[in-house]
Image (cartoon, rainbow, N blue to C red; front, side, top):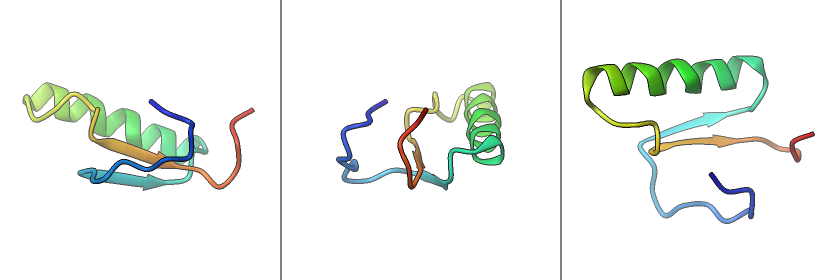
Length: 53
């Protein structure tokens, strides 16, 4: 996970917003991908307009 402002060259999943809905979506998606053997969640990008905290 990175907070440098640099975006990866490509991602498979992109979630806009790091509020409760966005983070919950990312968590459930990562969990389901892992359960199906289709990934570990490393290919999920969460974009938030403001800094965390």
